Image 1 (cartoon, helix red, strand yellow):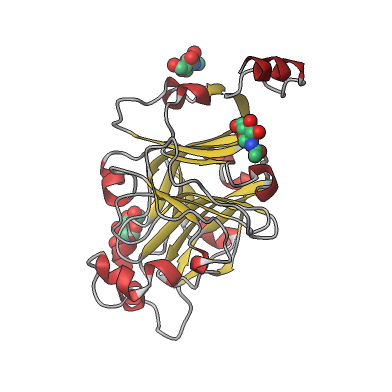
Image 2: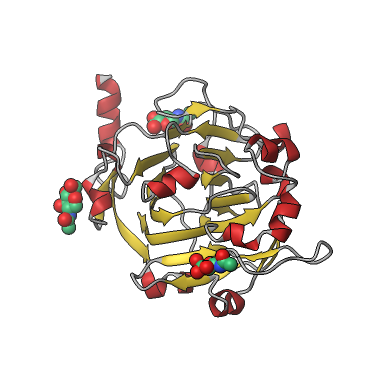
Amino acid sequence: MRLLAFAAFLVPLPNHALAGQYSLEDTYQGANFFSMFQFVAGSDPTHGRVNYVPEDVALGGSLALVSGSGDAIIRVDNTTFLSASGPGRNSVRIESNKLYDTHVSVFDIVHMPQGCGTWPAIWENGANWPAGGEIDILEGVNNQIQNLVTLHTTSGCSMPPSRDMIGSNTGLDCNAGVNFNAGCGVRLPGISYGTAFNVNGGGWYAIERTSTFVAVWFWGRNSASIPGEMTNGSNLINTDNWGIPAAYFPNTSCDIGLHFGPASININIALCGDWAGNSAVYAASGCPGTCIDFVDNNPAAFTDAFFEFSWIKVYS
Ligand SMILES: *[C@@H]1O[C@H](CO)[C@@H](O)[C@H](O)[C@H]1NC(C)=O
Ligand SMILES: *[C@@H]1O[C@H](CO)[C@@H](O)[C@H](O)[C@H]1NC(C)=O
Ligand SMILES: *[C@@H]1O[C@H](CO)[C@@H](O)[C@H](O)[C@H]1NC(C)=O
């Protein structure tokens, strides 16, 4: 121990003196929010029953807007009855212009898409997928109430079964090439997703990526342990004060620095597709008929299929 401490003293200090201390690099908020993202138009790579619209269509058709209170909203079309032979329901997929290597991102989320057929996600994505790594921070389907945090990588990255976190493993091999790309997932306990999350007024998701680990925290709006740095949107944060993470991915059997590179922040709302539309998964949520019929013929059911952000802050 002492020898290690002494050796560490001789090594040049990293760019911040305290391990978990970061300062604000970017704020995505209000009128600036959408100019810091590009809209990724077209069909959904995971076969969702959606048509991601370009920026002018999203902003013109109120599928992307800034509310009167300054929150950024992205939503799914909730008025059009679809033809079975036509494209999917209009929706939004956005990707940050900027890439981030080691960093902390914090998402103050007021509302997330909920209900049958929905498959929303907030994720960070490196280049040449899966070479640059993918981190799914908030993701789920249909009437789920617990969030699933997942890493997807190239081969040679797996997670130890027991580790210091609140959530529970759903898979240990992060390799996107096996297990139908299930990745190494961690299911969060309690209300962390969907309708009940919205009833609580949402909350904060935060991710820290260093060269040796990835950690994700979640505090519901009514949590008793929200760090003051969340509620005041501080310019300085210290993740050492945030407590045990909801999901923790250490470097025990995964060279995090090798498997994760500069990544964009991505947000999208898919409907149906490979996960939400899987007939067993869809039926298990108590959803009616088939997912695609439901999406095509029930536009008003997607009125609550929206994300609303107070802000997103990135720290380095
Ligand atoms: C894993 O990370 C720790 C610091 O969190 C570091 O001391 C250790 O050398 C790393 N191990 C490997 C195999 O990279
Ligand atoms: C925000 O909260 C943190 C943690 O409680 C505190 O250290 C910091 O001084 C606060 N900053 C502001 C601007 O209120
Ligand atoms: C569609 O969503 C808007 C915005 O929330 C809402 O005002 C409107 O009533 C919804 N339309 C239908 C048909 O449900």
